[in-house]
Every structure is written in C-alpha cells, then in structure tokens.
Image 1 (cartoon, rainbow, N blue to C red):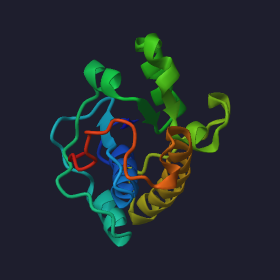
Image 2 (cartoon, one colour):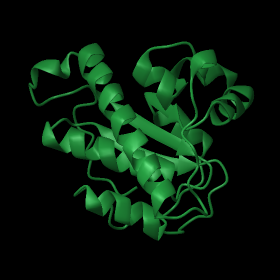
Image 3 (cartoon, rainbow, N blue to C red):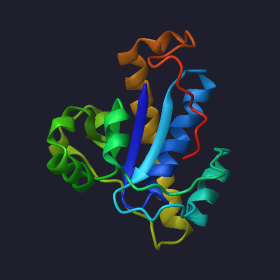
Image 4 (cartoon, rainbow, N blue to C red):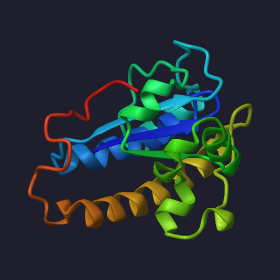
Length: 174
C-alpha cells in the first residue's frame, strides 16, 4: 500500500499527516509506503518550525523532511492520494481525471462521506503555535480514522504484519 498526502507547499499539513500515519504504520510493522508532496512546493524547503514542534510534542518523528513538488509519477505510483482540501482534490482531478477514483480529501476518506460534505483542513502556514496545534489535533484524528479504514479494507486489521505492497517501507523521508 502506498499512501500520498497532498497540500499546497508540503511544509505543514501533508508532512504532518504523513508523519502521523508513518508512526501508525511502523507501530504495526506494515510494509506500507507513506509520502507527501505539495501542489506548489519549493523543492527542499524544510517543514515549518511550528509543524515540527507540534509533532515533537506528540513524540512523532519528522526529522529530515524536505518539501517535494507533486509529480504525475508520484500520483500514478500511489494507491491512495489524500488531499487536505476540496480545492486540492479538484485541482488534481481536473488535471488527472483518470486518477479520480484514488484521490480523496482526507476528511471524506476518514469519515466515509461524499466529497461534497468534506471539510478542509485549515492551512496553519503563517500562523502561530495555536493554529499549528489545532491543525495537528485535527490531522491526528483524521489520520487515525483513515488508518482504521485502511486496515479494515486491506485486511491488515488483524495485525498480521504484512499489508498490501509487501516490500515497500514506511521509513522513507517525507
């Protein structure tokens, strides 16, 4: 299983979501690949300090993150693409309509509701610690729900240690 999180700059929301899911995947010793990218990312930019601190307060590792701009290849390789907003999803579906079935907002996927009912994950970029904490709390809850759904749908719920995608690792740097 290969899950890709997408936001705008790949310095706040999508790397935080990826870090939360990566920890869950590693705790279960699943062979899933978890990654993130941004629609308008500047390659190599580190995660924002507030995002890194919000993860650190939750003992979620996020060292070494470098922003990546989303590519067609990343989208094609992913089994599931989770966006932070309806506008991110719509932008991807407009450009890559053939991939629409695997592109969802994280909210709609986690809550199993139609995309029209999805709520966006607010972008904390430029905000203070409070905005990043609120974003981290929302993402942690959404990722937990999404992970439960993925476990259920992949058959890995029993904790057998092997998920779909066998040889992939979840240790890749975001």
